[in-house]
Image 1 (tube, rainbow, N blue to C red):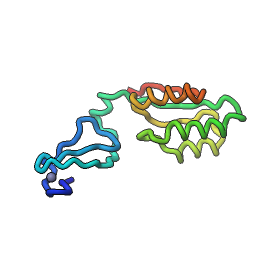
Image 2 (image 1 turned 90 degrees about the horizontal axis):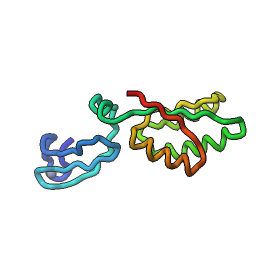
Image 3 (image 1 turned 120 degrees about the horizontal axis):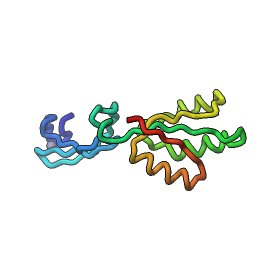
Image 4 (image 1 turned 135 degrees about the vertical axis):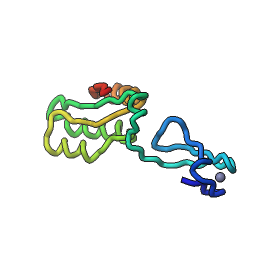
Length: 128
Ligand SMILES: [Zn+2]
């Protein structure tokens, strides 16, 4: 990645310490700041620095399936690793427990708050 303004190389670009989906990179050569959409595999040091949780949801009864699905897609759609297609697949298969995938500790805090507001309960288990 080089600076789009002055063309300075990789060594001149300062990146934020914490990787995220949308990062602001700074060119130390010309001072230009630019937003970069990053899709990271989960780097190893990130695993050790941040807690990763596995989320599961248990459908309370048949009548709640459609409602739960809508609530979950609303609450989880901006999460880094959430995959809607996987959730949909489990709903179609009629699973009673839906595996929601991996979430960062910072996401879990926000999700729990939204769950309270939507009267829904997701179970989170720490993986590391
Ligand atoms: Zn530059």
